[in-house]
Length: 269
Image 1: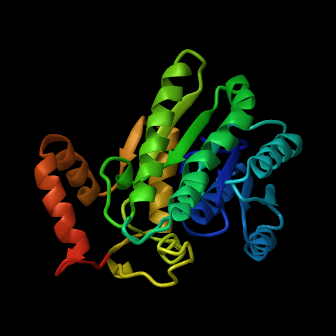
Image 2: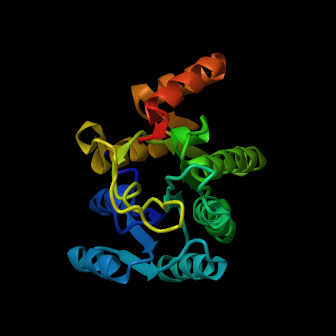
């Protein structure tokens, strides 16, 4: 990796595991100053211990809570003097059909995936404008194509992408770059932590982890896209195909998506 990130202050939400942790580790090794947050104190403490000699600031934060986000951003600015790059990575998924799902499940997913990004970006914006920084949203193919059993997740990612596109346009003359990236299925904890119909962690994943992109590879693609100031990145061939087919052949996309997620009328993925 180039020295692009050297001495830059990067705030990463949800950095204690999965893609977020891979981003934090890669950025620290690239010379960046990192602030990250998560809900699990022990995982953050381990991260802090593993990188004790690096410029790493961590806070226990629930991004669905506006005041927690304010504390995370304000403490980052206090420790490092400002923010150059904000990566809105924290997220949660769900796995339940609407006929079974509690509305609270959809609300919780929206609060974390969408409002978490809104809160953090809002509080960091003045510093980002001052430093002509970058705002990144970690989205999903579900931000382009609604996925069955993940209606709340899809809604949150559609909302995130629409919101980022709007603020990207607002900030075009400010020097602030706004972008979003869409990983495919990645070996991270997001599926195990996905909420079931009762809003509890599902605890297991029906996906074949062996066929997925590693969190480290995903982080590498994200960081390269940030350096090149890409507008959007859809990472996998399957993802690119899904976006293309959904745009030009939506009826076919409905059938293909149904076939992928269902077997004998039952949601299997």
